[in-house]
Structures are given as structure tokens and as C-alpha cells.
Length: 336
Image (cartoon, helix red, strand yellow):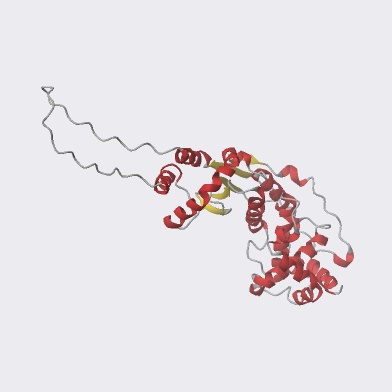
């Protein structure tokens, strides 16, 4: 298990004094970083055993048995010629499914019928992706270790975290998810899809784990200000870890939603500004309101991160964050 020590990352980030008009509340004491434990489980060999077996032509059917020869060597008396019985031939899809279960036996689907159907749809595509599949975990881009190292340096963990990257071959659905196993969080990464389909979902999942573990609200925002800032800081951390994407991609909203919010942002920000200290955030956790919260937070954090680090913002007291950082900025934004 590899240990990525994060202490050296702290010296690279400087805290810039805030201006009076938008002065954030005083940050909590500087967090002390801890070791991040990483391991890898690569399922590539199992998949390749299946794939190489499945692309080989099936063995020919067995020949009918030769007639028995008596011990005296004389030919037996003529007997009625038996009618040949058809030799059962295994259908190609049946053979493929049998080999899949024999060698690989891993799926992202919820039941066997869906798994088999997904395999049949994916089968013609594997040939075009076989080179990146053969490269396994070490061929993944962006490199998972680089992404999590960047995220950990921004959030700064204060309690140990053990992760295991599980590199698997799916059926081109690009599923990235996590699951706890014996005190370790498994993070499942698909090999068959391209970097664009995997990179941001991977960064979002890892960033969410870091945020929930590091923030003062521990995954349960205590007011709307914490929710908005948390969603935006997650997106900003992803931007640092996987650069070069559009804001709406980091915010996980559609281009249309981003355009809508930006067009009406003054009025939207005003409506949000009146509720920042409210503990009722349910309305902003889905749909159009979620897009509004994320875009508003994106605009606020562009200013806040020029003054305070992510690690310090997520550790502020709820009222300090709302009154000292968010409310003054969103009022100014809604007035423009």
C-alpha cells in the first residue's frame, strides 16, 4: 500500500489578506495533514482471459464413434445403418456468456439478464478499445493518483483515509462509483471508456469523499451558505485536478442550465441572498434550484479563493461563512 504524504503540499499555498469590503471570517487553525493510503486492484487480466478465449473459434464438434471390431477380427454381420443424431452446437452468445462467467464474472448491472444483454451490446466495441484495456490501471488518464493527490492537497485531510482503486472493464456505460470494504473505500474506474467519460466523474467522486470528510459540516450543510460554497469548492477543486473543461462540466449541470442562470443571475443571486442563513436547503438540492446554487457558488468562490484556501473555507463556522464571506459578496453580485 502506497502512502502519499501531503505535508509538503501545504507550503505551496499562501493565504492572501482579504480586503475590508469582502473580508472572510477568520479561518480556523491550520489543519494538520495526514497520510493518504492508496492501493490498486486491477481486474484487467481476468477480462483479457475471457476476451482471448471468446474470440477464438469454438472447437469442432466431436466425431461419431467408430464401429466396434470383434475380437476375432471378422467384420460383424451387416446391421441396420443408424440414423445420425445431430450433435448439439453451442450458440455463440451462449458460449460467450459461459466464458464471461468462467473467467471474468464482474458486472455493473443489477441482475444476470441485464448483465448478459449489456455484454452482447458491448461485445462489438471491445476490439476498438482493446489497447487501452490491455494497458490496465497504469494506462488510465488522467492518472488517478495525480488527481487524488491534487484534491488532497486542496482539502487537506485531518483523518486517515484508505482508498483502493479498482480498475475494471465494463460495458461502455462509464460507471464510476465507490463502495466500502473492510475499512477501505473501493473506487471503481472503467477502462474501456475514454478519458473524458471517466476523468470528471472520478474527480467528482474523489472530491466529494474529501469534502465530506474534511468540511466542518461533514457532508450535512447546516445552512444554504455552506451548501452553496461546498458545491462550488468541489467544482473548483476538480478544476485544479482535471483542468481544461467548461464551468458547467465541473458544476455537473447542462450547458442550457448554465446559460439560463447566467442570463438571470442578478435576480437569482438576490433570491439566494435572502436565504443564506436558512437551514432549509432541500429546495436547492435538485433541479433548477441546484443549478442556480452551483452557478452562484462558482461566481462567489472565484473571489473567495483569491483570499482564502479551500481548506480554510470549509472549516469556518456556519455563521462566519455566511456573514463574513458569502452574504457581502452575493449582495454585491445581485446589485450588478
